[in-house]
Image (cartoon, rainbow, N blue to C red):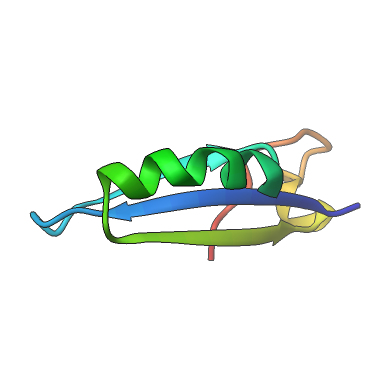
Length: 67
């Protein structure tokens, strides 16, 4: 089973990057006009997570690793 994560990244003039996770692409699209009015440098990312990436090896679940 795959999960999908959607994130918005904001690149600030200081060089820092702020990431906010959203539950779906639709919620990002709803929030995007406000985000773009506040921050000129924005990117959207989608990450597919496979079941094997979410297993801690002991039958439990852990926070997925980002590659």
